[in-house]
Amino acid sequence: MEFSTKVVEKMAAMMAEELGNHLPAPKDIREVERGMRELLRQVGAEGLSRYLEGTDEAELREKEKKCECQGKQQYMFRREAVILSVFGRVSYKRRYYVCQDCGKGQSPLDKRLHLAAGEVTAGLAELLALAGVETAFAESSRLIERFLLIRISDNTVRKETERFGQLQQTREEEWKVQSQNESWLQERLQKHGKPVGRLYGSIDGVMAPCKGEWREMKNIAWYQVEPVRSYEQRRHHASVVGEQNNLQAREITYHCDIQSPDQFGALFWATACQRQADLHEELVFVCDGAIWIWKLIERHFPHAVQIVDWYHASEYLPPIAEAAFGHDTPHYHAWLDQARSLLWEGQIEDLIHDCQVLASIPTADKAIHDAVSYFSNNHKRMDYARFRQLGYFIGSGTVESAGKQIAGLRLKRSGARWTETGAIATAKARAAWLSNQWDALAERRAVLPLAT
Image (tube, rainbow, N blue to C red; front, side, top):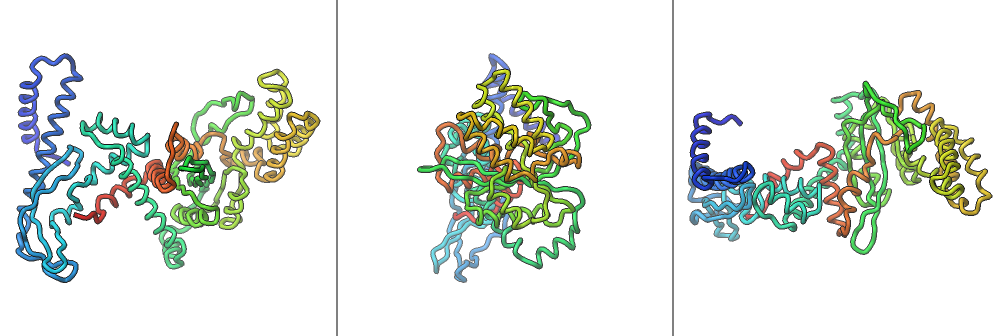
């Protein structure tokens, strides 16, 4: 917004004079800045109150209004309301009507601006939810007080964070309906055509600490990959194997839920349609080796390229080396470097053989069994030399897992215990923020039909 320069200069002069009266000899600039911020907050609160009252007075005054029950609402008086805004508590008076038939009351101003007496405003709600998706609610409350100079309870932060997650869930339910609508799918194809290039998808699961039990939160990440102009070859897991630092992910969108694989399939397909995964020239999945993941992919996208994430595959090797040779010994490093090189080059049969050679060592038996089973079941998905030659991203750390970004960094904080509903809502809100879809939720929050 562009405001009048003269008005801004006049207000600035008045504020400077008022601050000078309260701080004639400040000890440092921090005290000056905090004083100015508090003055701005108080001016903002008073200004918002006057703006709302002035807007209400400027509207056409009617003695009667039609009620939703088809009865007539009669004008009663200018009723006072208090809202919790980014400037703190703000009180204002506005016209108030009451229906003589159903007894329901309403304020035209509140209805138009989607205000609710005693509730958080949409502007503040967005900031509370944003803090809530980043850190614990109690810590968020302290941060909000530092940033806005107003006190907000951690419970209010939680409620608004979960409300944003519920709004995201509503969006996803709408997507599910669209994804089953043949007309909508055809219109999308006619509008966008078939996008060229590759679209990637990654699915994983991570355990979330819900009250009474741990539940698996399933996650989807859709993204594209582009080359990096300059990069340095680095060591991977302290080995000679290089990472794919020549590739980086972009336009990542995250989605999550606590559901069975079959239920999660509906969200998987719906979000795929939103990213036009079914229309893309080439679709590539880079995932863990979990059986439910690949069954889901094969059901919806049987012709997609399937790649087991390099990082997950390489994690099976250190337990074998440690069980066979001890941790951080010369033989440990020698065997591990050789094994990772074989894996990097997609020489899976040779890698399985090298693992089985150590089968006579009792302490390594379980680790070897787990690794051999994993490599055998995913043999075709681990042809890493060919994948790299064709320019595919194989997941060697360029993209943080969706599970770590959503559940690991927010839900699995020390001492956290969630209701399942709260965990899902908070995770969905965080996923929307990480996916640059926050504005869509903020716009929906601004027009919620809150009761007055």
